[in-house]
Amino acid sequence: DQLKQRPGWIATNPLGNSTITFSVELPLHECYVVYIAILRSYKGMGTFGTQVRDYGERPNQLGEKPKRPKKITTKDGIDGLWDAPISVWSDIQITEDNIPGCTGYCEISVITNPMKDRRVGNKVKILTISARKCSPTRSKVP
Image 1 (cartoon, rainbow, N blue to C red):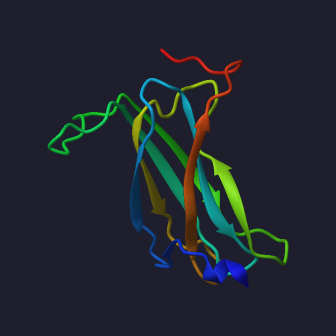
Image 2 (cartoon, rainbow, N blue to C red):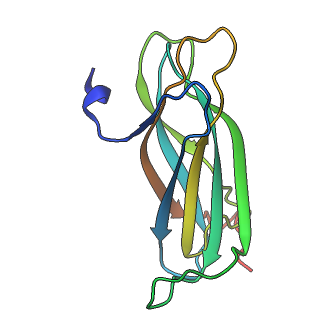
């Protein structure tokens, strides 16, 4: 299984509440759609939520980020379990084209949920975070 060899963040706590935060710095004042790549598999997988905090501007020279994000986007109930008997990398779109979710400096957090009833395992594996510019026909940058 080549996905076992791919680096990534793995959480397995059956109680959930494992968290990791990624900082993303992109050119300012653009609209970006954020994606998260996860491992999807047919056994042992759990669910999680994400939060994208869009600060827009970068941290200052002392590394202090703006006090409050100008926008927060959340997505809950992302599930790494599926029926197909295969384990694959899967890209999940976290923010939308028509609503700027990231416009420069953003923080993306992943928070695992408690293990669901009748599941064996609560594994969440994050492989990558990526972003692309919003589609010009669908986006509205303030």
